[in-house]
Image (cartoon, rainbow, N blue to C red; front, side, top):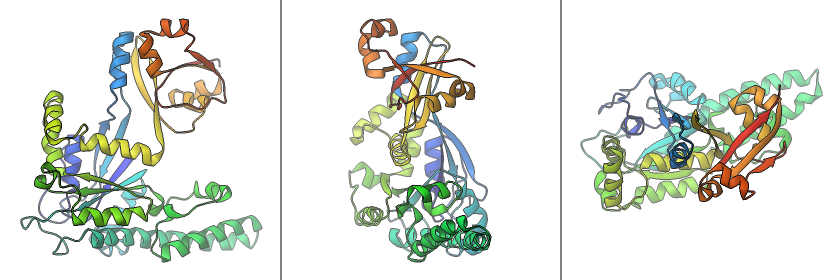
Length: 364
C-alpha cells in the first residue's frame, strides 16, 4: 500500500513524514523545500505477530508494510504547471490513497503561502487542482472512446461513463463520490484518476491544543463538515508532537501517550484509518522459519489470498487450514486448537477474515 502525503507548502507535510517514517525529509519554513518526493517504508504495528512468533519459536517476524510518499507542496495553478505542479500531480497518480495535510493552527512564526489560516480554502485549492487535472484526462479519454465508438458500438458505454465523470468533476465533486454500476466498475479498473482515490484529511494542530485535549477547534470542525460530504475521513494529528514521539523508545512512547490520554500514536491511528478506508485486512502465516502478516482486500477468497504468497499457491490451491487468531491463542498451540476442532479445512470459496492464521495446501 502506497500513501501520498499532500497539501499546500508549509502545512506540516514533511514534519509529519519525518515523524511517521523516522526518515529525515527536508523541512523548512519556505515553500517548495521538498521537490523530489521522499519515500519511506513503515511497518504496520500488529502485536499478534509477536505473540505467534513466540508460540512457534519463529526465527523472524515480518510485518505488513506501508509506503509513504512525501509529495511537494501544491499551489493554485498546479494543474497548469505552476510550482512544478504537473510533476507533483504525476507523483500523486501513483499512490493508493491521499493523506491531505491541512493546517488547523495559528502560528505567526510559520509562513502560510496564502497569508492566513483557512483550512477550507486550502482544501479547495488542492482539490480544484486535482479536479482540473482529472478533467483534462477524462476529456481526452472521452474523445478517444467517441472515435472508437464510430466503428464499434461497445465503446458507447465508455463515452457515457466519461460524460458522467465529467459532469461530476465540473460540479467540483470528486469521482470517489460517484456510485458506479458493475459494468462501469469494470471500465474504471483501466482508469487512473486523482479524485477517485480515498482521502484522509490530516488536521494538523499545534502542540498546545493537542496536549490540552483541544481537538475540536473551529478549524477542525470545518474540516470535519467538509469531509462528511466527500466520503473522506478526518484524523486530528500534531505533526510536531508525532516527531517527538518518534524519537522515544516503545516504553517511553506508551508512557507519553498515556499522559496525553491516547492509547495509540497518530501513526497507528493513521494506518488503522487507511486500512478501513481501503477495505484492507491481514491474515497471518506462522511457523518455525517466520511469522508474517499478509495484506489483502476484505472479501478476498482463499486461493487469491494464497496467491499473495506465490502464484503457484493460487494455481495449485487444494485447501486452506484456518484457525482464528483468538481461538489459537486461547488454546495455546496449533495442536491444542486441532484437538478442539477449531482448525478448519476451507476450500476455494472461503472468504478470508482479518486475523486468520493459515496454512495453505497446494499441488503444482
